[in-house]
Length: 329
Ligand SMILES: C[S@@+](CC[C@H](N)C(=O)[O-])C[C@H]1O[C@@H](n2cnc3c(N)ncnc32)[C@H](O)[C@@H]1O
Image (cartoon, rainbow, N blue to C red; front, top):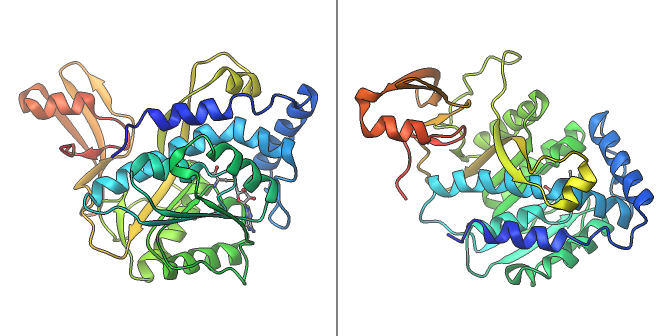
């Protein structure tokens, strides 16, 4: 696997300067419009990213976070498929290409990469940013609308990152089914909200019905043990903010926590984790409380104490979203 730090830094450097040349008032207006679109009922009939200002705002405001969320999902997927490397990748609704950065950060080596999106300004900016990453210089940026006429060429990996939210139910079904018939592996990431989780669970069921096995986050391909409406499965990843990011988002924190929900599935045999930590571990004196999703499938709280020796040390290091027990590198 690649150095996990370098691509994030290359991306940050490529994003810096993006708003240069844009009048600050125009950039601020574009960010406000984005926030309004994503907060309310997200429009599904026409692109949200309409021009360069929209796309620059999106890239500066959201891309570092969507990149980290996809990377976390891909890391979990790669742990469950240690002998597999995709030789082709299609990112549907790829926008400025956050998932292509995450895939190239997860698996080195050459591969055919295509980004499909209906927003030409997003594809144009994505191509511009990708020039900074040698692994992404050959990417094909292609205009394509997700709808009944969607077609996806056969490939190893399809990613669908923060897209389902912008589609009506019919297009979501079309997209998942088309991805399932095109790819050996499908990784879908959504915001870590109750609605995001619901869309992930619906997609998960369709992938299983299409013959896929779940590699992550679930330790099994049976029904999710969460009773609908009572809770939602989601994870969190830390995103460092550049000064540009701070300027666009406001506030002075050096980082933010991006909450996301995901499913990663494959047509080939996978080795899911025996269990996964599904909440932030609680560290108490001499013990760690871990909320786990296990293979039964069931949600269980396990207490690991000092008496467990090495396992206790591992529990103290365990993070929300990790496989349990930890996977040896
Ligand atoms: C929130 S952005 C996510 C972009 C990127 N995948 C990421 O993770 O940063 C949603 C993307 O989906 C695209 N999109 C939404 N509806 C679409 C449709 N019907 N056909 C094609 N692309 C669509 C948008 O243009 C936008 O680039």
